[in-house]
Image (cartoon, rainbow, N blue to C red; front, top):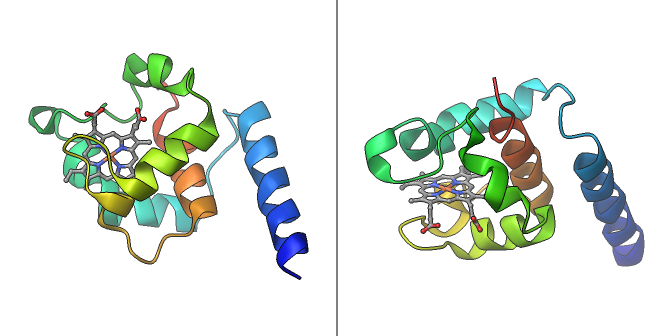
Length: 102
Ligand code: HEC
């Protein structure tokens, strides 16, 4: 069971990494609006801004590293980006969503 879940999470991350421009689902957008906009849509926070090219260099680290930084917190970014209900998969989805340039 655990192995199946891990494999599933792995393929979701892989899918996510190979198709960065796919449309985000409503749940992902809801989580982003609720928890991440406080900083990722406020320039003064120092956070890389959503839907801009500020994600380019960060994406080079790979989605796995970005997700683990989001879980642990990094610099002024709080652990889980304050979204305690988020799973690693939710975080990966949100990151792909807000890292898209628009
Ligand atoms: C309280 C402000 C704040 C909130 C809320 C917040 N972030 Fe951040 N985030 C930051 C800051 C500041 C940085 C830049 C940290 C640095 O590199 O020093 C950052 C960076 C990141 C990074 C890049 C990490 C890296 O390794 O380059 C990711 C991914 C991220 N945030 C995801 C999220 C997600 C997903 C959410 C919502 C669930 C979220 N953040 C909510 C402030 C925030």
